[in-house]
Length: 260
Image 1 (cartoon, rainbow, N blue to C red):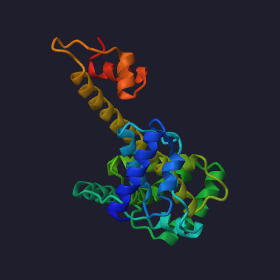
Image 2 (image 1 turned 45 degrees about the vertical axis):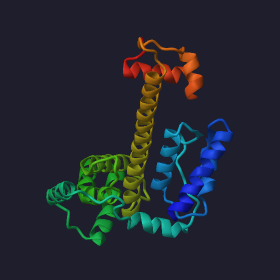
Image 3 (image 1 turned 180 degrees about the vertical axis):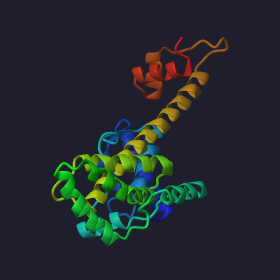
């Protein structure tokens, strides 16, 4: 999508928000980009930008952003398996990953071997064999780490992603199903990571928005005080001027130490 077209659409969204008292729905934002090749990370950044502009977006916090389907289900599943880094590992993270994999006894196990062993171990786990749980965990630790490395994101370091991937693996093993196989376990690891990454991304958006609100309020307090550093407006009046909720302003003031 060309920069000029992208900027034009952002301006149209902002103009719409101005006409709607600074409010809109997440679905409205999605619709503005449904005919483009914008991806989920880019859309999240658009949401973040709009929030910093003071625009309230209903549904952005609680509902996962889903772009219009442009691939078949099979293509999506293949993409999930063959997913490559959207964020490259740093040299330090590459070194950590190598060290981690070097410490995994079964790091070089072939996929066919893993698939065959999985079937046997799942049967043993379902029969109550606790040793089999440890064996399948050991078998999948390097796989879990590689999946984590392919899902690298800005919000998390590779060490944390691998830890979360292993937690997802452990949860999957504890809830093992009769139909569980190699693709099933890999999918459970990815799903667990996707949930964590989504939470981290939403938290970053919330943190960035809070920073923007603090900066906005600090600038306003500075502009709206007299020569004796006394506020010329009440909190209620400030809320109207800044188009913010009273409780929101008080919360930000508490964070900045200006709630005297």
